[in-house]
Length: 464
Image 1 (spheres, helix red, strand yellow):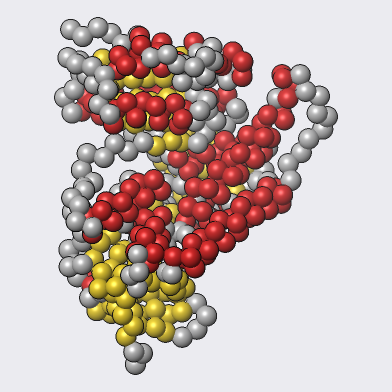
Image 2: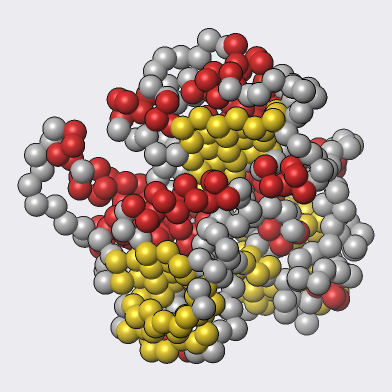
């Protein structure tokens, strides 16, 4: 029987919120350990956010080269070297992992690599990656477990060996025909990137539109842009079964619009959602309860049903973004110091990194009406923003929602160049409780994308 090693702070999982908490507490002199089974720093720097955006930028460069003559450039013959695309991504990941290891060293946090499961309340048994077993107990325990890609129970799908984001980021060849299951963030970002690399791409989603949580006008514009690049898109489509093998020859029998067809491709990417990493690690022995979908039950202070046990990030049901996990860390950190912070009422922004990107903060028009709110709505095509005349990137639009009997901004969405940066300006105004008229009347730099905010807010209908 291994002796039990005791820590003041014990973190399971080294994702965004967990690593920040561990570095903070260890730097303050608390004995702190993090247990991580594989990805040092979590999924974001290794297999999700940053690696995907790295390859998306390579695809952007490929697209610019492809259209270089429009900008007066004569480039000659150009081709894609996927081995070099992958190596650029790998070099970035290696640098990020090294940076994380330095933070662990400098803070004094002990990083323990291995598979862990609870054997008693606040007590983990860890099977070390390099052999051996350790038993760890924490005065306070923090669960930063993350999620993994879901594989739907479609006949033949699992046997076809489909790619997830992890495997797609590691291939060193260009798929002849990439079939993407899913019309959300991951699927659409990769669909556009691989189309720009040169693959034929088909997107299949069972939703009635792409990016289902967005307003229909937003989804329609995004679909128009992607289809304009040669991506085949099937919405409202049910995959009946899958045959063959991804990486060789894969066939999907699909029912859409009242008829059946077979989609044949070389490679299959599944991007249909995420599943929390909560099964099989003994959470029941720790007194930690899960909800019906397998996420950890927490209150608005991110406290679980077990005393002195908190949960952070996606596995706690927080919105699945790194920046939200980082906010979870700040809530827990401040509350441990005597504060009273909460997850209630958080204004969560997000961005889909297609080109142009889609960014939103606050309510969509659909969400507002579901809540019984009839907002004033204004839109502005990106072609009305003079900056697009200089760049040639005029697709998309801005959209804002303002309360009907006041000047409060309820929500903002944008499909267009630098959408995430422009959105941050509106988010700042919303956080500060500023009336929309402040942005309407502001002196905004010319010629920038944000300059369009003046025209957008000037188009808000008068209150009535």
